[in-house]
Image (cartoon, rainbow, N blue to C red; front, side, top):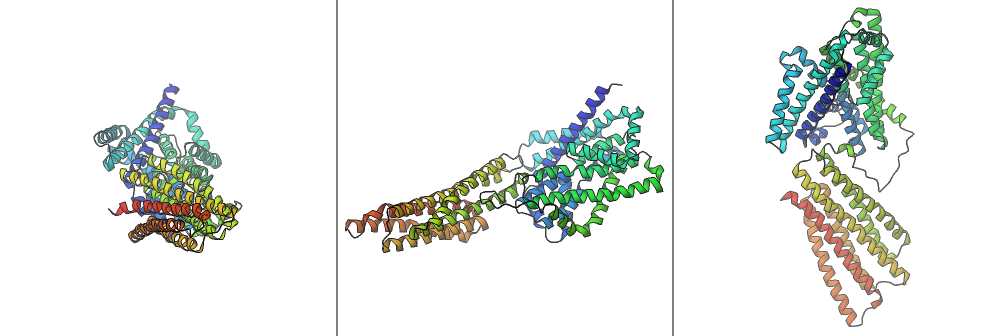
Length: 548
C-alpha cells in the first residue's frame, strides 16, 4: 500500500478544502459588505433575534470561531455589549453546521458528487473572475470557485482515505475512540484546535466516514470535542483585548464545554445501556451532519434560558483582570473588525472624533492658561499632547491596514483616504494648542500680562475658535450639514477677527498706546487660533463631500 501517496492525496485534499472554505467565505463577506452593519443594527435586547443573527452571519462566513472572533472585535471596539454577544455566540454554533450539510450532499444529491461538481464550479468561478475584475460579480466568482474547491478537497480526502478501510488498525482506532469518551473528545478537540476550524474538522470526519471507518459513538464524542476545540481561536484572539472581550471568549468556551459535557454523558448512557449496537454501527456523512446540527440546536435550546448566568460566570472568571484606563489607547479600533470595512470605517470616525475631543480639551485649557497662567493646566496640555500624537499614529496604522484589506470597495477606500487628512487636522489642532501653552509659559517667565483690550480680543477669538472646532467635530460625528454650515461661518469669523485685531494692534503700536513687550505672544496667539480654525474647516469640508 502506497502510504506516501495516500497521505499526499489526503493532505492535498485538506488544503483544497480549507482554501475553498476561506475563498468562499471571503467572497460572501465582500458581497455582504455594507449589509454587515445593518445586520448588527437589529441586535436589540431581544436575545432570540441576536441568536438568529449569529446563525446567519456564521452561515455566511462558514466558521463559528471566526464569528466569535468578530464578536470579540466588536466588543473590544465598543459596538456590542457582553449581553448582546451571548445570543450571537449561541447562534454561531448553529450556523457553522451548514458546511457539514454541503459535504454530506454527495450522499443525498447524486449530482453533487465532489470530483464531478468541483471542477465545473471552479471553472465557472475562474471564468467570472477573469472577465469581471472588480465589484460584486468578481466576488460571486470567488464564492463559486471556493464552493468548487471545497468539494474537490472532500473528493481528494475521501480518495486518500479510501484504502484505510482495509486496515484493521484504523477500524480499531475508531472503536477505541467510541468506547472511551474521553479519548474521543480529546481527539476531536485536538484536531480542531490545530486547524482552528470546526467546519474543516467535521469535513475530515465526514471524509473518513464516507469510506466506512467511523462508528456512531466515536463520531458523537469527536463532535463534542470539536465544539470544544473550536474555542481555541477565540481564546487566542481575546489576548490583549478588553476585559469584556475576554469575557466573550470565556462565554464561548463555557457554552461549548458545558453543552459537550452534558450531551457526552447522555451519549455514554445511551450507547452503553440503551442501544449499544447503534454505537458500534458505521455512521454516514449525512448522519454526522444531522448529529452536528442536532447537538448545536439542542445545546442552544438548553442553554438559552441560562444566558444571563453564562455572562455572570464569564464575568466572574475574568473579574481578576484589572481594567486599565489609557487615554492614548485605541478605544474603537480592533484588527478583528477589518474584515467588515464598513464597520471599520465607522469606528475610524468614532476614534478620530474621540481624538478630536482630546484636542478640543487641550485647546480650551491652553486658552485658559493664556489668561490665568495655571501651571496644572499647562502640565495637562503637555501630557495630552503626547496622547494625541500616539492616537494619530495608531489610527493612521489602522487605516493603512484597512486600505489594504481585500474586501474594501473603491468608494470606501476614498472615504478612508479623506480620513487620513482629518486625523492630521486633529493632530495639528493639538500642536497649535501646544504653541499657545508656549506663549503662556513665555509670559509667565517674563512676568508679562496682556492688556485688558488684548484679553478681551483674545477671549472672543478663543471662544469662537472653540465653537468652530466643536461644530466641526459634531459634523464629523453626526454627518450633520447644519454643523458644517456653522463651522464654515465660524471659520470666516475667525479669519476676520485675526485680520482686524492684527490691524488694530499695529495701529495701537504706532500710536505708542500699547506695551510692545506682549506683542510677540499676542500676535502668535492670533496666528495659532486662525490656523486652528483652518483645520476645523478642513474637517467640515471632508464631511461636506458626502452631501455633494
